[in-house]
Length: 334
Length: 134
Image (cartoon, rainbow over all chains, first blue to last red; front, side, top):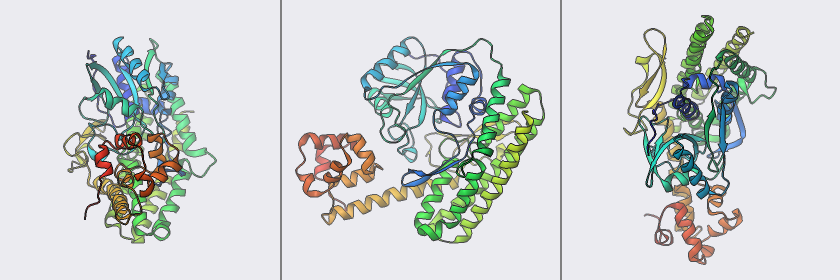
């Protein structure tokens, strides 16, 4: 049994899955729209959370949050289930829902996804994909970060749904059960924007929002001296990976947000959002420049402090830009 | 970024897939463009794999000098630390740490060896008879 499900490649897994699940049920909302409404734009530096032994910098809120916020603001009811230590039940339940002709969103560990290029396969557990059918031992998979639909065996899917470590999925699955006939996007958009602006500007902890970018900039500057050239390069490399690699659509989701603002301009019939989108594109371009310079700095793991100073300066510049940007955007939505 | 500036370098997806990149078209409108890869991404991804490879080499050195059991090699190779491995094996960390010692490793029961082998996706034979290269 294979549902008539359209595979839509996306920049980011979480928004991509929701967007295509909703599309199956007749609601056309782009990945970018879900991302904006779900307040997906963020910055956080969390030295107390380590990934591969390196402090985590993230350009998005915790996994699952975009999804739940977007659903709530749109009035969509989702059924969510987790199955702690019950892999068999988790798979049975998935089969049952598929039999009802409903595609299902699944949280999964990346390490066990055999269809991924080897270079992707790290222990990261907050990936999302859609299961849209089953034949014997094979499940049909639509993974938004893949160009084409793919498959997994029963055991592979089970393993990935029960990956261990931080953010372990515990078999989490979800699907929409109630979508309102008429959805007014405007209030949802405004709520999404307001929260992002607040998060970026006013969280009174220096690790989040634009303050977080400035804080990390200070750290980056000291990395070569504090950590030595080898470790400093690993740290900077991971920062670039968070920006560009982990399904961000480029520049740490900044371009997706610019795409969102264009759609907002249309919904609101307000050209000022198009202007804001252009500003956001410039910010995204600056992050791309940062990534490029940072990668050059890591390459060969040279301890040249100039490279680190250059990227740290770029971060300060971007922090200022993002601060100005969200201050203006906040005024727009008033 | 403009759509014709979306990089199309040979990349880490190795021809298996292409990635979505958001870019603007000639009318300034955002579209999704497929990208084969970008050299800066290759650089940073390679660095991460270098770090993993280095962990494996350190593990092998310890195994050769009798300071660690073969588990350390496969733990490094599968990008795990003791915390993650103990999660998968469903044993407390202190036990896993003991199994990393050659002496305790030799005393492991078949059932426990199978458990480790299964987690590493290898056979018990490969685990028990592992010899570092060189």
